[in-house]
Amino acid sequence: MLNIKLFILAQTRLAALPRTQRWLRYGVLLGAVIGAGIGVAAAFHPDAVARLVRQELEIPVVLTDSASAPAMPGDFWREEKIRRGDTVGVVLARMGVRDADLDRFIHADPGARPLYRLLPGKSLRVKVDEDGDPVALRYLTRDGDLLEIQQDAEGAFRAKSAPPSVATRVQLRSGEIQSSLFGAADAAGMPDPVTMQLAEIFSGDIDFFHDLRKGDRFTVAYEVHEWDGEQIRIGRVLAAEFVNKGVTFRAYHFYDPALTGPEGGYYTDDGKSLRKAFLRSPMEFSRITSTFTLARFHPILNMWRAHKGIDYGAPTGTPVRATGDGTVETAGRQGGYGNFVLVRHQGTYSTAYGHLSRFAPGIHRGSRVQQGQVIGYVGATGWATGPHLHYEFRINQVQHNPLSVVLPTALPVPPEKLAVFRAKSQPLTGQLALARGQLFAAAD
Image 1 (tube, rainbow, N blue to C red):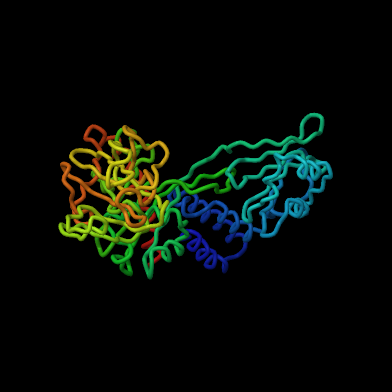
Image 2 (image 1 turned 90 degrees about the vertical axis):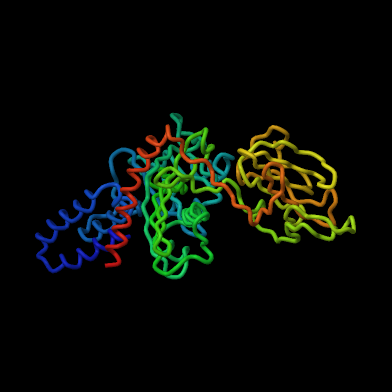
């Protein structure tokens, strides 16, 4: 958005020049913007450039309203954005495409049914011959597949769906906190999935409910997956920087199967993991009904005894997460615990989960689990007066208070892989600096 603003500002200053000089300097200005590199291109979308150039130089817009476009020799594609309430027939009519055979095929063939559920904002593309008759149609469905309808050699239409060929580009965004993280992200044009990733990445260092201050800044480089210029989905955050109360935090994505698992992990400049080895809570939403204590009156045994865990009250069937990576040592019935899971983690750590209603699929002795993976569901099996989860955090088989114990961090990047990590992170450092500089320039 910064580059667009700068381009518009430059336009207003050039407006006073004679037309011939103005056209010449527009070309120089546009060349400077495009020549600034991938970082600028990430913040200055090509479509935005095209709109500015077409508006100023009065170049006709092609393929946005093909009903009025002049005929061209050979086959060519027409494209139309889907509006709220549109049917496929309405969109085709708006493009000036009317064909009884295609209409009958769309209504009769099961493979064309995704066209009955058009998504506003997406595009419908139709290929027409020199007579304006349709010979092919393309549409990205709700499921992310590419639906193609093509005319064969005999003139009959055929439909097929397959995953599209996806291109990935890097997008840069920077923002400054005025009232909230999501408010600043919206102002910067950053999608919600990226904002949520950003909060999760730095959640071990920043309390986003209480620690944010006006003037805090963030810079993010993330993936955008596209097909034929149309955004399909948002990918991973590749690098991020957050300045909170004057302290700068940075994170870089790094993938190594033996170290990070299939999703990769986030690390500081020097390769330290930003992820804690354990989550504080095995449930996303719950309430604590009984705390860790050495003296509690047991509601079933009617006697005072230690309660060396945390009870989380939640409805039966609420998912329970493994708080750390590890191996399932026990998954079965165990006395007062009822349905019980014990996970052994790195070193001397283990976690226990009791009173489960059932186990998640694939959870059995010897199963490998990852942090955040659902391992079971809340229940009231064993010695329980109602549905809840009993959770224990153990060191050397001794229970400790999960809410106060000092949690270890995940493993850092191994020394032998630091060179690879730095080779991947250094270019991203430059992109973050570029986006940060654009934020400062906008503030000035």
